[in-house]
Image (cartoon, rainbow, N blue to C red; front, side):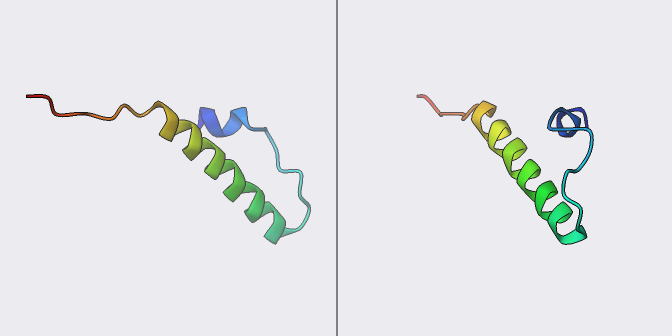
Length: 45
């Protein structure tokens, strides 16, 4: 929840559909940041 709040404390869009889109965009951004920091395990022999 802390990471979501880092993107902003409130929604800027007025309409409900646009608020939903704004939340989806924020989630996509957070998922992108998370994907960058996930280590990939490589099996070595």
